[in-house]
Image (cartoon, rainbow, N blue to C red; front, side, top):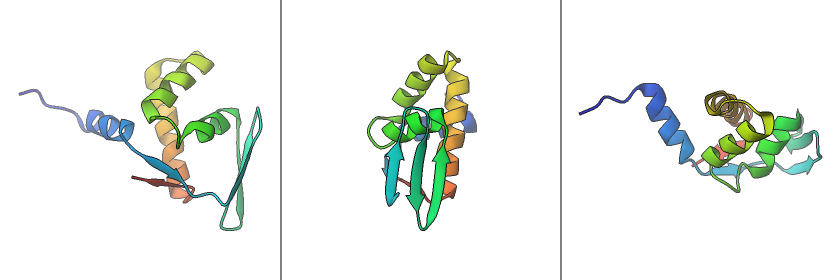
Length: 98
């Protein structure tokens, strides 16, 4: 039986996550987004705004593909970037992972 690395296990789990936004207000523009949560306003850059737009609508692996194509970067780089961003959203209580 083949051994699966911790990183690979994490990636498999994360690609199957359901994500629920916890924002009280959001405004998405072409090159940024503003998200309100518990009296704090978070400004997202263009990539963050694109991820935020789709985070509760399509699976993470589809967002990875979208960002990879949009930014013309390898899938693994897009994946690391998005998982880091999702972790920051979670730490700031902007999303709930299911």
